[in-house]
Image (tube, rainbow, N blue to C red; front, side, top):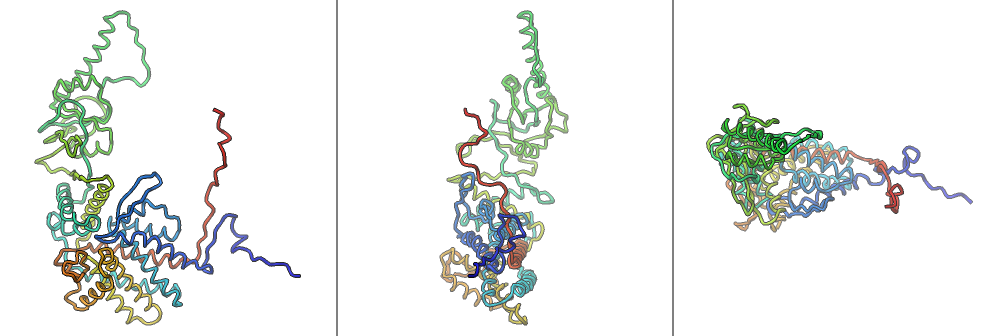
Length: 526
């Protein structure tokens, strides 16, 4: 009677206990592809102007309502190592361009879906990776030939709006004209010779009874505006009532002298980054000085930039070059909130404010993300102003050209090249499906139009006004940045190739362990 032989787990004597090992014999490659497709399909329905919103409740129970792929992925806690590779590629696109993050996820997921079909046909991963590399190189070269326009003058309102509108429409369809104009106006107000950071907010509630100042000199203090005190406790021996009166009078005289000093050098607005004492507030009001308390260092830096002042750590009369100027400081009511507005009317400052109003905070956050994308587009334009057709037109043209390349390529990589070309169809198909159109019919019309050389800028018409589902993107000014597309294709392709080249995943046991049941034995009884 022979004993039952139970085979050991893979690498049983190699690693410590608790390790998980997944190799190619267990179908690790296909499982990796499934995980990547799952995360890709999560954000795929959010692509395009009619993309669906997602509600994400994070670990802090904060609810986020958005169709922005970068925000969705940032709030999701993805565990699978290969799915994390796609998320990292999307985050890299967000850091590099600030736009087309969803394109990276959707395109990489579709490339892996096509790769799975090739694997089931019997192709080796080496042939697929080789074909994808050739196709990516050709796609990036072909992209350079699809330029239809460029931002000629970055200081032109109309030129900037043309580039911003398409990006904003993918997040806030219907409001793109308004938001594109607001963003372009704000950017032109702050645009120096080189792109500068855009400040979202520079308004705060005032303290004090002086409500408005015009053509005023401004000083910014980071120290408390109050009677100076030592850090350690001090003891004062008072022998009679006169000494007690003189003691408090000395403090008052000292503080009044300091405030009068500010008034005498011409200051009419003081911004404080620390506490303001009641006595100091009394003297500031007496001398007609507007006092604003801003405890946020973030806001204080931006106020300094607006008025051109240097923050001071001592209370006293500033030097002329340490003071700033402001045309108007006034308290207004916007949507029920009382705010203080710093406004420069003549001099151009490097700070602008866009005031957004909406029904819910979640909606406002989403509009803010759309504005943020618009600003990132202008930052990208300073690197490369060239534009390519949007609405899926560029993808269909690339699909046609890469499929034609696959027909001419010998040996097994030709199948991978053709599948790479087919993967581009996912963008126009998703845009059409989210708009409620028949995707198959729209794709066939797009291919028919693109086969005529003069109509290669035809894209998906999400409004479907002509009942054909297609439109001329150049005539409708639906244009995408070439540099955003370039980086998105590059990052998605590299992520897909990396996932395909993984045949084994070894996961160590997580640090720590389960918490012991019951109360902590180190706690006291009470």
